[in-house]
Structure formats: C-alpha cells, structure tokens
Length: 284
Ligand code: ADP
Ligand code: MG
Image (cartoon, rainbow, N blue to C red; front, top):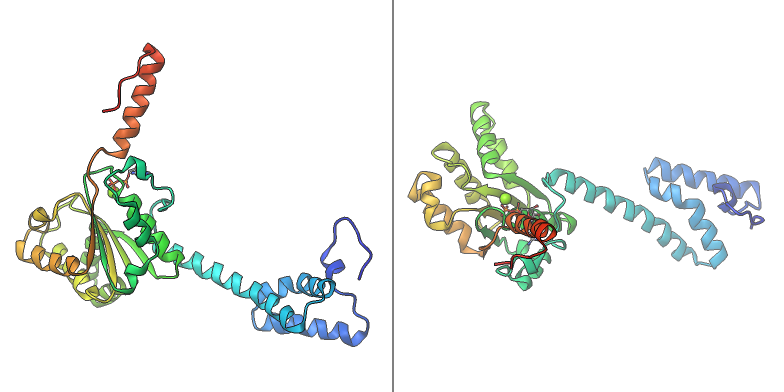
C-alpha cells in the first residue's frame, strides 16, 4: 500500500500496480466499465479495490461490492425518475401526518396502505371530507409511498384531468390520453367536487375509472359525500356507474371534523390571546 497521508487522493487509494501489465489491466477494466456505462462502478473502483486489498476480500466479495455500488446508483436514478413523473404537488409524507390532530383517521389502516399491498389487488382508496382535513396530504403521501416502493404513480386533479381530456378530444389525441391515464399503477385524482364536471368532463373521468377498473388503483379525494356525486357529475347514471367501479374493491376513509388549517389558526389565535391577556381559551 501507499504511505499514509492525512487526506488520501484517488491515486493513493488505487492499489499500486506491481507491474506494467497490472496497470494496463486496471486501465482496461476502467475502460470496460465506461464502455458499459457503469459509471458508479467506475467511480468506486479505486476505493473498492483498495478496501478489498486492505480487508482481504475474496474476488467474489470484491465484485459484489463493486456491482452493488452500480445497483444502488441505478435504483436512486429510477426512484428520482418515478418521483419526477409522479408530479406530486407537495413534499407531504405519510410519516409526517399527525394522527393526534385527525382522530377520525385509523392509523392502522394508513399503516396498511403505506405497505402498498392494496396496489397488488387494484384496490381503490376514497378520501372523503370537508376542506382542510388532510385529504390531499394523505393522497400525496400514498403517492410518494407508491413511487418509493417502485410503482409507477401519477398525481392529477379532477379538474386537470378533465381539462387535459378536453384538449385531447379537440386535438385528436383522445386514445393516447386515455392510454396515458391507464398507464400508472397508481393514479391519484385530487379534488373531485370542487368544480362541477358536467357532460364531456364527467364521461372522460368515467372512462378513466372504467379502463382502470380491477386492473390498477385510484386514490381519489373529494369534499362531497357520494350521495351528491350525481350533482357533481351532472348525471346520476354516470355517477352511479362510476361509484360502482370505484367502490367495488375499495377502502373508504371519512375524514370529518375540524380543519387542520383552522386548528392551526385557532391555536395561533389562542397563543396570541394568551400572550396579550394572560388567559387561554379552552380548545373546543
Ligand atoms: P384537504 O385536502 O383535506 O383540503 P390538506 O391535505 O390540503 O387538506 O391539508 C391542509 C394543510 O394542513 C396541508 O398543509 C396539510 O399538510 C396539513 N394537514 C392537514 N391535516 C394534517 C394532519 N393530520 N397532520 C399533518 N398535517 C396536516
Ligand atoms: Mg385538498
């Protein structure tokens, strides 16, 4: 080995070749890794070889360590790609969901959903509740968990889905767009019911739901109870048919109660009040 220096450079870490032929074999190995685009393995080659020599690793163990660096880098790249494609609107995760603030949410059920097993049976998840209770947070968290577990995931809103389908119809790309929304293993559709989706928009959503039925999962959030979906979709028959497909294999979470935003607002006001008057209004 080289003499020790306080800050070893890459060259220090490369085992000193004992012969010219060893040096050229090393250069060839680097060239092979570069030709095969195994850039992470190429980058880690000096350190892996140096550690192999100092720790007395077998050839098998050395190769395993080297290729593991490449596999790690490939996995990280794929994950970054899946997360980019997923288009999640916020960094919310299931881990930072505060269950104490949402007593109606069954933690065990969310833990089960976090395993992503529901995706294997093409089960849908419906999150129903008034604004501010954490529907989007949970939907984004489920999306992130799915992408991290290796599933192709895509996040959209009901309004955006309808607008894209409308543009697609005008531009003659209907079939391509339907294939796009059929593709991901998990499709998150946020905010059904905030805007009415009559006529063409409702049938686009219906078609997306139908073609995924029993094949791939949908996580859908809505502020409207299922009884008023006829109103939202402007057609009770379409609403009933869509609900049939969504609910057939599904988990429904009713998130009722105090809005998280209002809760923070109340707490903030309470803190201000306490600071100014020295009294504290009891919470609820
Ligand atoms: P909704 O989609 O039901 O209108 P959001 O998911 O957008 O509500 O929640 C509003 C804000 O409050 C978001 O910033 C979200 O992260 C936060 N929030 C809501 N509920 C919780 C919770 N139980 N734990 C942590 N953050 C929450
Ligand atoms: Mg929301």
